[in-house]
Amino acid sequence: MKSINEQYQVTDEQLDAATRFVNSATNEVLYIVMSATEIGLEYKVTWNRNLSRFACDPRCCANQHGLCCWHIRSALANEMLYRQAKRDEVEAAARIAEEKAEYERLMMVPSTRYTEAEIQAAQKRYAPRPFSILKEATSSAKPLSAVMSLTSAATAPGGSHPGSWRRLPILHS
Ligand SMILES: [Zn+2]
Image (cartoon, rainbow, N blue to C red; front, side, top):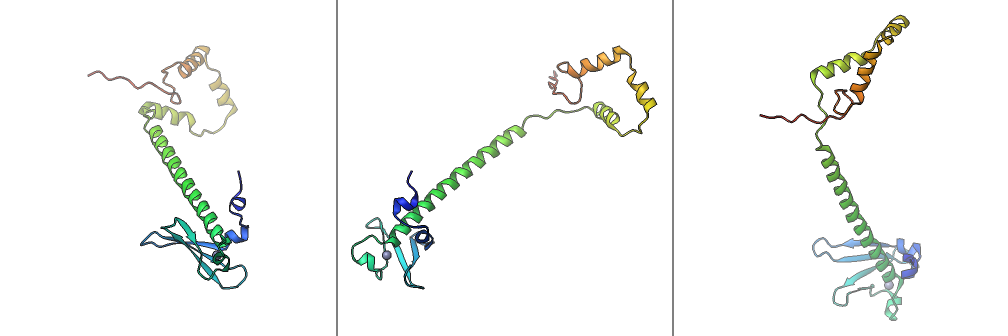
């Protein structure tokens, strides 16, 4: 794809020389383009609705000779860049709205609810305890059956392990 400079035959300096203005009452767009040769001289490039094209300032010499001066080319290039930026903005806004909706859908998933007993058991289990080798040794020496039942409770589907997902009970009234 051609660059905007190539497409409109303008340099970066010429692109930067133009500033977009919009009349808030009529929505008319005009560009003020700084002269490259005369400091302080500004050309007014206006949109001609009847001709559907930009027209340069009457003081512009290049334009008087029937040429499409760089002021007009710069205004055109800037207008294209402006419209592309607007389109990108709309796309980004739509994407953000989509992501927000997706997030809200996800947040509506019912959360896992813990019973009071499960919360208390977890609080007890994860509460800080003073470290003692003797205590650790005795507590780890659980009978095998106790270890087995703990493991199966944690892995069984619908088990009461607080970290696992559970199917919510269906209430029959
Ligand atoms: Zn001009």
